[in-house]
Amino acid sequence: MDQTSPKIDFEQQLSNLESLVTSLEGGDLTLEESLSSFEQGIKIARECQQALQVAEQRVEVLMKQGDEIVSQPFVPENN
Picture 1: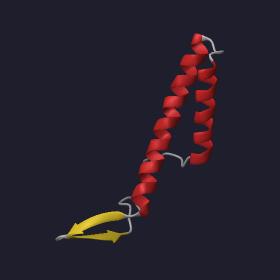
Picture 2: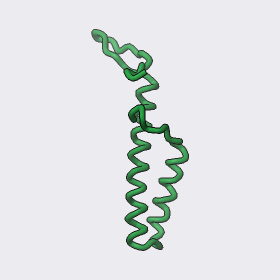
Picture 3: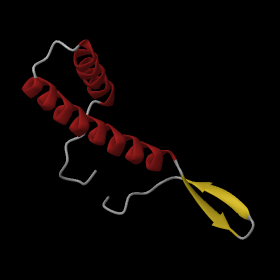
Picture 4: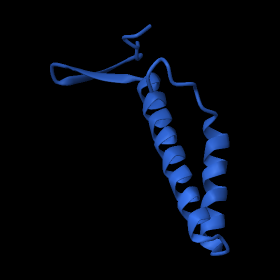
């Protein structure tokens, strides 16, 4: 995620995604509603994936020094 992207509420977005999947699996949506839900689900899934990648980087960065792996905190370049 770049600096201009708003931070998402990961748990809320995951819940939204689960709701979309449930409604799609139900089979009660029209074709247009299904396509719209699918597009929204893809967008949410991408946002969640980006949030997970940022979180993973923030937890720690592993740097190899010689034959040893040393754990160091992640320091974003933009901050």
